[in-house]
Image 1 (cartoon, rainbow, N blue to C red):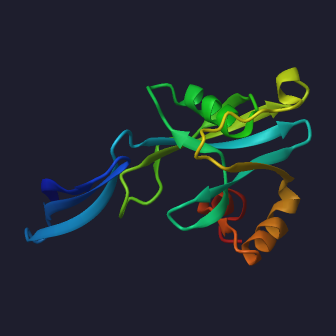
Image 2 (cartoon, rainbow, N blue to C red):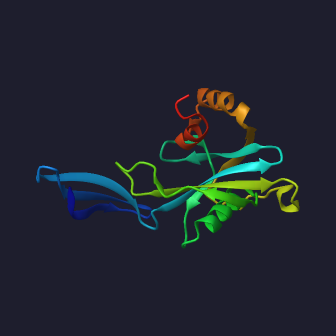
Length: 182
C-alpha cells in the first residue's frame, strides 16, 4: 500500500476535503477521501480532576456540526510544540481552572478512517485550595458557549444517560475513558 497523490477538493477556513489516490495490496489504484484541518492537526483533550474532592471536570458545549450541545472533556488545538502548556491553556480558557499536568498519553488518532487529527490526552490535577481555583473565570471566545460540570465518577453514568434523554449528545471520549464497553 502506497500513496500516489492527494488532491484538495474543497478548502474552507477550518477544514479541507482531500482525495487520496493510493495503490492497494494487489497494486490496483484506489481512492479515499479525508478531512484535514487547515491550521493544525494536533489536538489535546484534558481529563481534569479536582483535588481533594475527586470530581472530574466536563464541559457541555454547543457544536454546530450536529446542532446539539455535547458533553465532553475540555479540549483544543495545539499551538506550538509544548502539548502540556496547551492543555493548561485550554483548561483555563474553557473552564477557568488552573491545573498541573500529571501525565500524557502517546499521540493517538480519533478517527483515522476519516480525519488526520492527532490527539493527546492530558491528565490534569486541579487543586481546589488554590486561590485562583476558588472562583474560576472562563476565558471564552465570543462564539463559544461552554458550561462547566464537576461530577464524581459514581455520578457520571446516570448523569450522561439523563442528559442524552434530554437531547444532549455525549462525546465518545467521556464514555471511552470511564466505561469502555462496560
